[in-house]
Length: 242
View 1: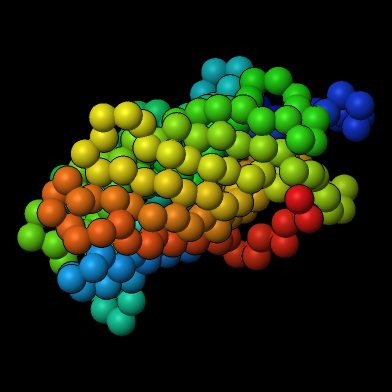
View 2 (view 1 turned 180 degrees about the vertical axis):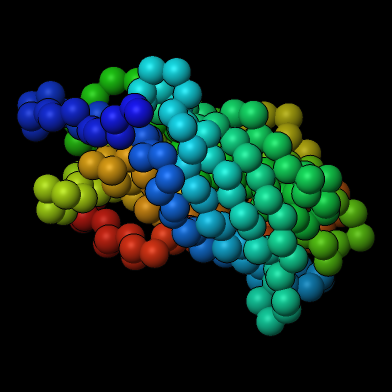
């Protein structure tokens, strides 16, 4: 039986290794809430409750792990729909082999795709406080109240490690993120906020991201605000002062 992956020891001078690894069989529960207010249309206030169970590590630990997830998705005040999904998560956060019967659903599908946002892209090497790195992210908006679907928003991200704090058994990396949609996107967005990653146990703890989405090319009156909040059973810590 393969031993569970563990974070390697490191000194402050070496920086911090930001990575995801998950003991087989461990279950993590996420709550995701997405709020948006398009001018002239119904306000979106939707949620997903995701219960994710990690399976055997793929290849050499901790390169990647398989996960099975159960999603309960709905709008606040309404009974949720349920769907399952499977995927693999690389050490640096890329999510692969996403499969689910709900991918084609106009609302459920958006949340299944957005499972990728639980794992922000991380650098290959150790990083010190204040160091930044780039990546990409794709946001799917489950805008069921609109007369047309909004295409997914592909954005360039810039993340910065602000600091690592907490007790030895749960060191939390506070990572600032800024995202701007790539050139040529029909729907554009600008987002910023925080991700919180438990680097001791190799899992994401949550995120708080806000911004605006501009869909005037699709005849929406003006850019509208969007808020994305992700939490686990452990509330994310407050970020340190910049």
